[in-house]
Image 1 (cartoon, rainbow, N blue to C red):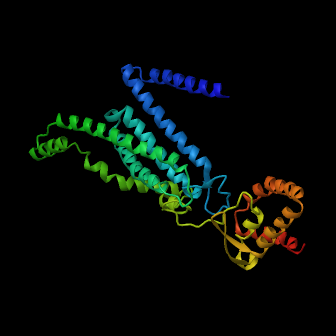
Image 2 (cartoon, rainbow, N blue to C red):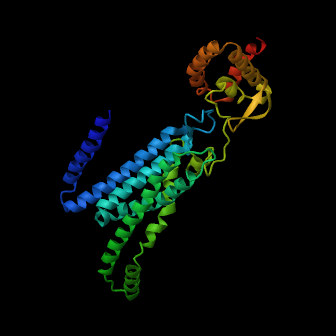
Image 3 (cartoon, rainbow, N blue to C red):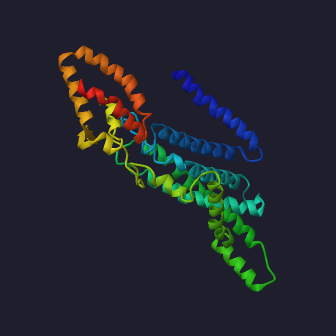
Length: 334
């Protein structure tokens, strides 16, 4: 397996460079190599981001075993908005990188606008994953991509602005005021004002389009706030499922209070949980079996870990939790 991974790490970049060199055959080899390495690093940061997401993918309303993963820093309900904006930003970044002022004026302006929009969004992503109430090493995997995007965007925008400044400085106008203003803008190397004025209208148009596909007008903020344990999170999560705990009982406690009748708050391995009569009885019953029939307890525990935990991850609503509580109610009297 190690050999396969090593071969993949060697062959894949090599083939990628050959293809990229063919695409960029009009540039110097040293430039093509530098660009390819840069793109490869960017791709790696995206891979790290996806890897972090793999371990933190549950929404706030899902009861999870903290040992097996964590909560997603982005609400899946509003995730299409974030992905769409980021995809537009990446596409625009690529277009500006390769074409620059060679693009038609309208497309050039839109690309600059989307790249600029991507910067505060990436900054928000960075802030979102900067802290987690439950210690998560995966947050470092999340942070590389938005930071790299911000860095790359600034480089590309500066290059485009410099190119625009050179082009502007070579232009002359008959009108003295226009000529003075043009030269002034060229010296300060600023983007045309009308590009900045397009930011809000373009953003609104994209949001309206996304609303036609079921997104909310404020999905770009809800994607951060309708989460739990992260920086901008405003939601609370159900009690954590302990890897050696009573999964179904714990999930059942997340049901309607009038039905499951929570008694008090408790703590298990440092995590706060809700305790009801059913959970107390289940804990006491397991301890009784463990003390008097350890082998039988091991068999039961193994069966419960194998089937109870996967089943509990499917129970994500109050109605489902109520149903589990009612089904397990007769066991309280054994």
